[in-house]
Length: 401
Image 1 (tube, rainbow, N blue to C red):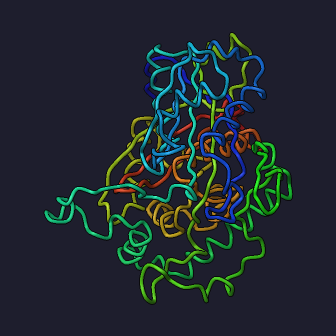
Image 2: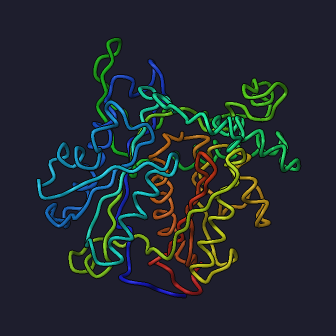
């Protein structure tokens, strides 16, 4: 396997609970920048061996970069979090893969020696800033047929993927969604998700001050029967419903990445080691297929095959998108290596924040599975892209069970 530059490690990750977008949601009256600042502060509290002045960069992603998600979030977030004024920052936008891109971008800087330690983060307050707010697409997209008109509506791209791959039926999508809810419920019962969450004090006019300490979207007890009757909002008699897709959500994530020798010097945890990453484009009207070519590229760069991957964290924007990935690689819908703690269909998908949720989940799963050497995080991306990061488990022990 080719290694270039310095070894980069994922030190730690955390997130807020995810809330439902809208006036009655968990974070309806909480600012987006306050959410991500809360996570950054708590992440540093959890890692007291990291001197704040050793942080070389802060990259914060948001898809809709206006209002409280604007103003160069990386820099403004660093200042609001109380980091030294010497710590710079910048903003990232790659739609759903914002946080994933923030992580790979600072990891690249670490790899070439520009940084020793960096923070990557993502936030999306879809209640305050719905996807597409303030956007003015160039008329050439449609007049010159550069993209299919349906490519700008994510739900319609999921219906298109069902069309392209007719073996991915609504029944399979619903069954996958039920399993995601069940796995999330079991992970909560086992106390696996709670340690990754940063409680957030929230205030509403009706309830006053409350403490948000768990995800709002999960629907434990979801059944095939309860999903069967849901409306298909993107197409009459379609297959995509609110039950087999991620919802509209608010939330934030953050992670610490470092050069491995610097992590050793400071005594920081090494939860994962970066192996490779790749992004790839696909037809925008079937954007959910993006993880397939991006994973092929990342595997090739790493000198690995899909059989080398022992754990998968695949973002569940839509069930059909995950199923298309699994089908391509001949992986069963219910393979226990895939999203062991459930995914976005249950906990939510606050767009630009989700990539680091995937990484944080995988880092905890690595600790439980020393028999697994490699894992990956992957997600589809609006306008027809996919992003994949391959990680090595530093706890790997050959022959472990």
